[in-house]
Image (cartoon, rainbow, N blue to C red; front, side, top):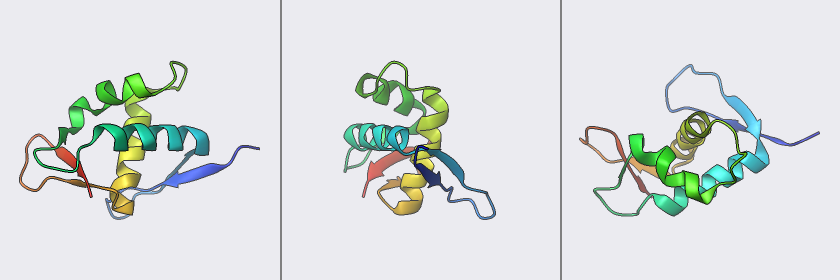
Length: 93
């Protein structure tokens, strides 16, 4: 049996999603590699394209996993949204 990581969302009342721990860690490392520590940060819409080169080809749904892991990293405080930015931009904390 593979271990799972519960990925939460900052939205109140949303149920966590459990994903394979190895996939979670691969996406976590890729996201933290491409998200800078300084503003203006990286646009959330660009994130899947930016993390793709840092992941195996057979990883699964790139957009879905990127979004799911990004939300958990926000909950953990590892990345944050740049205030007053539109479209949504992210930086590492």
